[in-house]
Image (cartoon, rainbow, N blue to C red):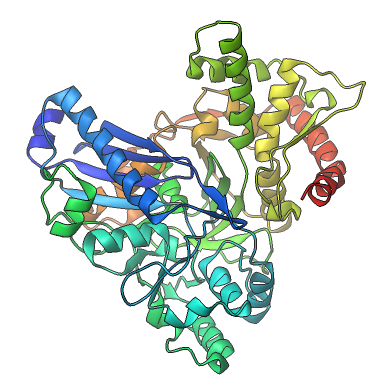
Length: 529
């Protein structure tokens, strides 16, 4: 069947992912290949010292993104989308969305970017003997309790962004296990929230006398391939304001961007890993066994089918690079040169390859927001250099590209050097890798490991959740890892680049400077309130 016939027959599968700066929709055919796309650009806001998006922005963004997809389908194929084989919803993980019994949000959505939960995360980590990150939902909930927030008593449902949208489209209060593992730790043997931690938390807050216990307010945990409900008539109307889309379409369990990144890079088997690098960055290494002890820099989450994963999550990655690229764009406009943003990125990224392996002594800090791995509660973007450093465009760009993966490197050194985690393949995806070769070489030098990138590297999580939606209806009894290996990727592992000794040594010299200059970053945070 042609792509047009697949769409007309209602056999296409839709994936939608809410990223930090872009909402993206991908429509795939029966061979799991993208045939149409849509997108909507949005940005979080810092309101009352908390990073948030409004509920109105969530829905207007979703509708704009889907409208963009409809336009692409009509332009390419001259048809309307009326039926789909399946839909999947994904979004940035973690955060805090609490609702009352009238389905009204009680406080503005608190995103993964917030770092105001230090006391709660510390106390829960000790209580559970398990690292509880600042951005996890349970940290946000307990921080609200510690602060005596009045809304806590009224909570009827607590979920993530993907869980919220899925709930509104289907009426089902469920969550994929990968995203659920960013709400509360998961027991990989039961494929559910840790019963012992649920009990400990309930006992901890019992004196408060709330009218709920933890399982009363959390979404039901589902693994990939399980029934997660159907698109309701109300949900169809909210998604497609034109009224063409019909109800009754099955949805897969909603997932977080970490899970969809694993799927999009075929990294759900043991001893595989991936690095997602965009507004934030994270690496996911699928473990053969549990770690020897908790680490503050390592989050224990799961694959979409429930296997344990060691995750290194960094709040900052490409945002500062984007800001600098925009400066070059403004300069071009100032002197009257036509602007092609893609070409600006390509030329600047490739110029970085001409830089010294250690960036000539330059050091960059890309901290738009706080970075827990290096102990920063807030961010102050900085470029640090001495008078004798080689200040060239090539070194400047290379320093910014290195900075985007430095915190990731620090966290992964714990796994590789201290825990001796073994990985056969690491695959990169996300905007950092859009310019061929460049980001791949930088990450390979940082991790001292070959890095693979597939042709679909730029498709990202929207494609990943579309694959999970396709798996819901086409698994044919295969487990998720085998379905991806045999059906979707069919042995394709992408293009691999290994670092040279000179590149690894150069990055390590840069990292030594980076660590040595961290007190400057801390001082900048303290001095500029």
